[in-house]
Image 1 (tube, rainbow, N blue to C red):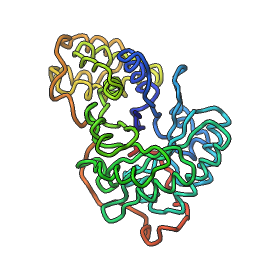
Image 2: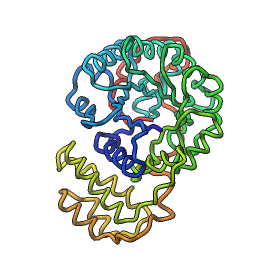
Image 3: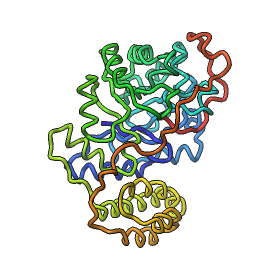
Length: 366
């Protein structure tokens, strides 16, 4: 049960909140909560923003860091730095980003098509962690589009090079976040890669979805992204479902209000109050989905600037309101499918291993 890295979301504040809620509702913390993606080169060069993104809580364990990378050299240096400076206990590598500004330079979900380059990147991370207890795992998509599937090769290569697990977001890059995840491709990957665990990602919004995915595909675990936006207690519900425990009661609006305040406090601790309040605004919209909250209050919350103001505003919500029926389902970005932007000639030679120029940019992930 893994929290997928999401840019601007899965910082130490959100991860702490997910862990607190799982512990409070199940008595244990069993999920793997991964930090926001960081760019390998920016980490090596100690970019201040990147270093801040790698903040972990004092009792956070295991500390899981995801790297965005296109270059074996910087991959090795970043993984070596993580090990030598004890920055994390686990390294995941993301090859799933479908954002045009990333793929048009050959980064993100474009990389697995270049099999030799992909192999060298994974091998570099594994080599840098040899002799340590820091595992390397890899996440990717089905492929670029329906004509260019790469997940079977990517899973095989990652396992051959020493990755300890692989995760598949069961969409192509051209789908972005639209439509439905193709769970059948998770099953194909599970049949194809038999020596390391295979995790499934895509369209898990309720505990029953996780069970259905595992039963249908045979995958060894699930990765949750957009389903937990505004629902950080989802991991507690998933843990209960997967471990045969009684399902925690859905929170009332009063309980959600308390969670919003706690989230705001954690964001203020991490970013400072000014930026923390700017960050909480988008989360409030997700938290209040389907609940009775008037447009004026929602508007005021969308402009909140201080913690006292946040506390005062959510205190006016009707605390006894039950969790709404339409508070479930997809959240966050969805968009529409589109042709994937790629560098000129990118599809000509899948065995080319030239590092794409200028592809290490900060981005949101897939």
